[in-house]
Length: 589
Image 1 (tube, helix red, strand yellow):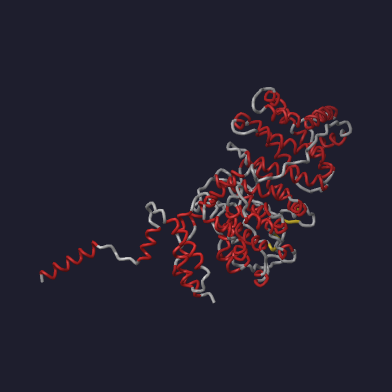
Image 2 (spheres, one colour):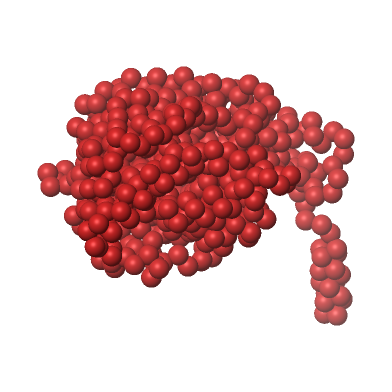
């Protein structure tokens, strides 16, 4: 008995000291993917293994396909870097394009519902692979897509499944992006989706055919309007990686209620942007706000988009999200009686909303410059085409005057970080556009009178700027030239104030009135145009067109790096497990 126990103990010690037996192929995999520095022949083995895995994906034998997925799963992370332009695997898909495969995924209802989000993000990343260093075939392919079915206005994106299956790339991408914006806003107001914004930017920037899709109308799926107070929050999910719910993406059939307002991708984007642009203190939200403004810049420069934006026969009610703040003296109730107007009015409203709500310590100068330039581009189009837009112009003028006042009041603090004179010049030149060309695009002569009324009201702001500028422009500092340009630009504003102020004071004295009403001031203005002399300023209706390279290159490189990092953190490899893949293949006929 003792000998048997002794023998059993010896066997246990022998079995515990031996390593578990492995088949030769398993040992080979262990060697290839060992964490220690690999031997010199290992990179060749990895390439060969990956090559055979790719070949196996084309096999009819399902087990081979599953095994190919399983072998390459996770192990290919050896090739992953934060900078996608350094990912050598992508060089393969540059040579062997998967662009058409992505389009096929997006064009099929079933595959789009399951893989649509990932396909859109993948396309956005592929377009940005070494885009400034070499010829990127995905940029070329995306720029020349001419999707005829979606250019037909009769083909709305919300039809029955049969027609949906036949939809082209533009209509399906539009539907995808729009549903993602709606789902993102509906479920997580605090989370922005940089990856989807990037995909939308690339489509708008690279392919002007996509501009036509922005205008395609359909019954509105409204984003709930929830006035929010800008309180910084830390999102629980990394930004830019939250896909929409599959139910939203996989349901092409929507109720066609005749009482519903019509909408389109541009309207959904404007609503989404109005939320994203509320709080720019977080780096990701700041990036998303910047990208929204870059997209709007591309749209504002496109002739077709401008024609649609200003079409008086295409009116929409756009309920933008507005910031609630005690200093803005706004009513808590959301205005439900929004007028139906051309879409350009909503774009201008969005710019005004941003201008009046971000005059703060952490002044987002870059966003202000972009907003003012967007307004300028739209005014240039209105001037050239003589479009008399019925817009709330006084809200814009008031916002711009308050911006000038803010810049001057915080001159010392802001000059430590920003060239405030460049922004001031852009703002003053907007007023010069109205002064010089307003009679060609303002809706009525009364609007032009109101412009002069607002300029006269800003006399204190103008006087303060005139007092400040000589002090800066006569110094030898870095702001001398910029300040001098603002001084020159203020010539007509000062001329209007100096012309009308004495006449207003005289009118008050003759009529023994201590404080004139608005209508009385307007009466003085209307009666004294004839003796006003203004100087003609050149170049007011010209602007520098948007160019990604070189000015925006650094921004997009960092943005793509951030998106790539967040996608990698949140990608789910569970869907590539053998049992899941086998189950999926078992359902394929």
